[in-house]
Length: 231
Image (tube, rainbow, N blue to C red; front, side, top):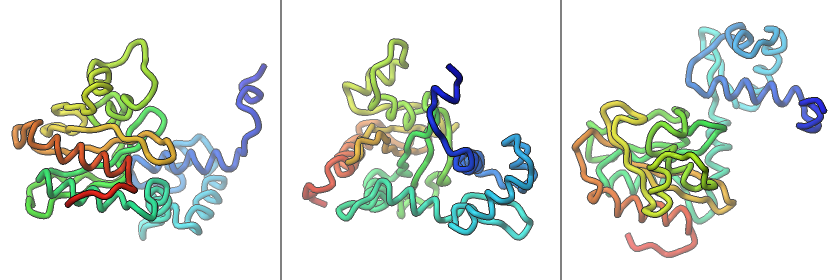
């Protein structure tokens, strides 16, 4: 049986559009020709895809003719993890200020973790800024390892993942952000999606016991948005 038959019926045009979005998700601006080269498609095909995505604000075209992800993607992403009782950025804002560290919300995309939202604490101007759409391998650092801890147990998995299934937290240093520590907690969204919530701070700035209570509380708010939480 061919690979195409194994995968079933697919829309080639839609797949190409999604491939274009995933390529642009690395944050690098590209011309239509550069994107065509990356996708292995003719420039005219990619140009039509980009024009359609631009109409829906999924990509935006800068004055130099290069394309990057647009605001429509961010709106879709927030809608997929938010509801009438909870806004992710409200939780991140509270966590960042409670822990005096940058708070980060990540979701999986294939074998990578992608930053969907990030908030710096208002009282610490020196806190690290982490750009939305930043991506890194799931196995490279606390946010990704926490996501893996919400998945099925694997025969060969990192010790941090196994430990996180019991403790509910993962702590790494210099991963995925060199010079910084990351403490993450796995979360499961209302629709069953796996994600992670993390705090990131300069090495030695905080201890695990200092940030863990606020992180656990924030993770519980995401997993149980209907509950009443004391501020």
